[in-house]
Image (cartoon, rainbow, N blue to C red; front, side):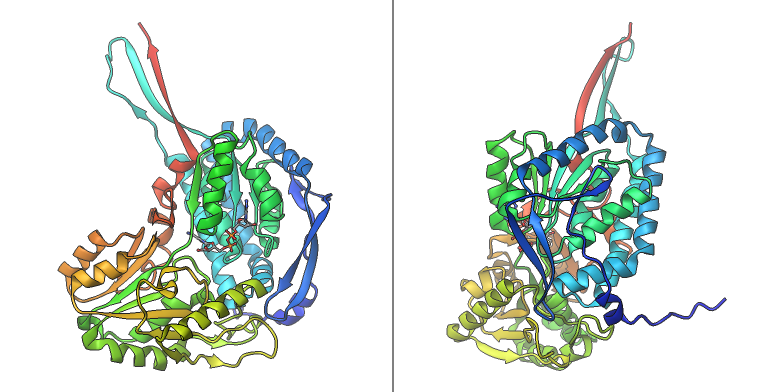
Amino acid sequence: MNDQKVAINWAQTAASIHFETRSFIHGDFVSVTGSDSFKTINPATEEPLALLTDPDSALVEQAVTSARSAFKTWRHLSPDKRKSVLLIIADRIQAERNSLALLDCLEMGMPISMALEQVDEAANFLRYNAELVDKVYGEIAPSDAATTLALSQAEPRGVIGVISPWNFPLLTALLAIAPALAAGNCVVVKPSEQSPSSVLKLAEIAVEAGLPAGVLNVIPGLGITTGRALASHHDINKLHFTGSTQVGRQLMVYAGQSNGKPVMLELGGKSPQIVFQDAADLPNLGQALAQAAFYNSGQICVAKTRLLVHESCYDTIVEKIKAETQTVFRMGNPLDEQTTFGPISSRKQFERVNHYLSLGKESGAALHKIKTAGNKPGKGYFVQPVLFDGVDNQSRLAQEEIFGPILSMMRFKTEAEAIQLANGVSYGLAATVWTKDLGRARRFSRDLEAGEITINATTQPATSVWPALSVEPFGDSGHGVLAGRRGLEPYQRTKAVQMVTD
Ligand code: NAD
């Protein structure tokens, strides 16, 4: 059998790709009516891709009603059947890998090679959650065994509203959809208005794979209207939000003003990476530090955008990053498989990143332009990565999430000072420590206020491990357990049942 990879002409495939402009409700695409509209734009070319209508409130109502009616069937499907449908969907995601990746690549500028990896991660995450379906048990509580049976049982919550961001459109939506469906809930998703297509395609794939109509509904729309309507809806039992801290807090207000639904928040970050002198000679350290800060052009919630370095190796580390970034990042057309560094996702975000660049320049911190391989294309919202050295940890550059390729560097003398700097922001999503000292690794993993700690690795050590690791953010980065076996719990309610049998 010839298993040679067939080269894909991505530009040609992109030219004929279809962008869905309808919503997906009760197992099918439905036309959208509304008075407002919005465009999706390719950030690599600045060209419009599609024009969508912001749905009126009747469509949100229709989506929630559809999910509510499907809940009766989906929650009672036997665990093996629910698991099997979800596993088939994961296989179909894999089968549609190219088209799903291409949609994310075109709508948010993520390089195609990265977008393909993200589809694999999404399928993997769904498989992990599908496998949990028939492995979750309730509890029998201590009671008078002669007369009483006391049970603590987990049940699905009902209809889950999911509001997701643009930075990893398919994966971030699935991080909520997968455990919600696995736990027996039905879902209404409002994807980001910048990049709704891969989530719409996911819903279509899911129904083709056997998911009953209404279990997964997708309504692309604007945050302030459609997102708000979903978050304020009285028949949504729980909200999962991934996005900025500011909007996350607003959603808690909507929830409080409506039915008091619980809100799970996966928000922004300003994560540190800390380098000790004993790790400065680790091979490819400069590459790893650059990867952690500049992956997806810095548009990732766990971007390690504050680099704290021991004073004894500070200058060495600056040089390593400058020398090694070009070995991992090639700037260019996202449709080229060699590209690993794409544009910023929108004009608005591009202007925001440039604003922080100006703030950095005005702050007096030393600016180092970091070279990538490849070249900046003629059009598109491309920003060359930069490193500001000697940044004040109290400055806006160090405190605020930028979501672009800007790395702020600071020096420290002692462990205590490193911990203080690392924890000295309002966020607490992730942190990395580079050290060969096991005692220090243990102390930092205990004292760092972040949900995900890595020692001598940029992200979780292997992608095959990460769906199994549960994580919960600190502070302004949100709350609620994501992934792992415990990742189903936010989508379940616990019911106590006491039966007097004699
Ligand atoms: P955003 O908060 O602007 O938007 C996120 C979603 O909320 C979008 O779908 C948007 O339409 C919607 N929205 C906006 N205003 C709304 C409102 N008033 N009511 C209801 N919905 C509203 O975030 P973004 O710019 O799309 O994404 C970037 C942010 O997401 C960053 O802060 C990043 O750190 C965060 N993020 C966090 C994680 C995580 O797991 N912690 C993962 C990815 C992204």
